[in-house]
Image (cartoon, rainbow over all chains, first blue to last red; front, side, top):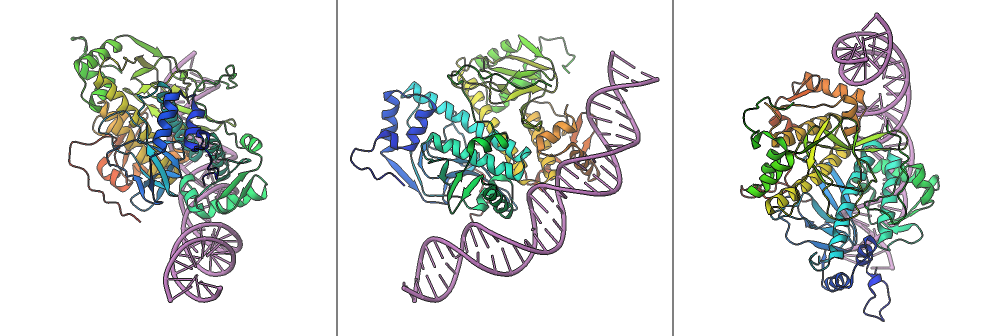
Length: 253
Length: 253
DNA sequence: CGCGTGGTTGAATCTGATCAATGGTTGTGG
DNA sequence: CCACAACCATTGATCAGATTCAACCACGCG
């Protein structure tokens, strides 16, 4: 799980959560120090235990250091919808008013390592990183809506895996367009609005067409670039890139 | 559209947007004054014109005073997904970091009346109202995901109309569980991940079963309470109610 | 009056769900 | 170290909800 280097006190670049936040926006020393300090005092939550329960007041915002979690909504008749995943470097319970209650239950699919989220008053760059992270949260929800509303089963799988690839690579958790995905096909089904049987068939189709390599809990997207184009996915973007503005190709109808 | 009373300078309670924000959290005088002042200087955007375009930098946050708008995502092959609606009292472009770009296009289905959003530094209560509004935005996105992922076509329609009822009643824009909905069935279809043909059939089913009264642009939900229960909808809640905590009836599996 | 937009209807089709059974993997306890 | 139990992946057959295609109608507007 963690790297086996034990010489130095653990280089900052090896902590995926910090790596992610630094990738969102450059952090000043105060911000990095605060994160490193926070990450030294961790808490572990066993898999399948609620990290936050829907309707309960939000106590303390935390930063995910390791593990996969999800926002889950359970319907009265047993149907379940997974709203989105929460990965290392993601913030949980960071919202700006008193008396807030959790809008969804959050549960881990693996044991979770979390730490207290450093206050955003410690560094303006940290504050900015949190704000960007929040905007990305919203962007992921919107991407999920588009997937469920207008993509075919196969497109949903592909688009979802590409999103995970994008997110995990920000935290440095991918290798050669592959990553560890500790989810069952049942979980994937509850995410993508499908049945596990159909997820299974679509994964096979992805294998046969050479788009995917899927084993136990490993996924590799074979030609990420090409697949991105074929399913019409556009990468998530919430702030201005440093490149000159992208030319809008959209034709107003 | 607007009330025909012209005696007084227009009572605050008659401005739906302000009514909504006050319903979210009590506002102090500074906050109300700022809103009233802002609402006196309006701008109008014609229907079908972009209020904000995806990928463009966000210039100035605005408050919707009148009209219906939506966040829209257009796929390359012409498919369209409506992510959610923006109604009077909703905030647009209020996000906490520099260099942010719009994550989606926002277009009006009616002419929109908007005004500049008063700065959240003017009043702590205003700031709180904005934060709650933002949390509600997120809650609506999550509700939309659940609708698309796990509800049947009929349930989607019912749940959606109940949400609109809930939101519009906060702004005082409903009468006897009815409201004006300036959307075509095609638009509804692009919202709910269906085709317009199927939306039509589901609306008819709603009429036949006595759940709905739908005409031109008017909708009435006949037995809102009952319908809420039958489709298993739970009302949106992002902060602690003043009542004692609701007992959790959820059975952990 | 004619056209365009949006609503309504029917028939055929298809994507994905459901039901049911089999087989493989992992983890645990004897 | 093996045996068993759970859980998960896989496969086939059938079913159903929603789409597609194609009309037709009603209304508002230039």
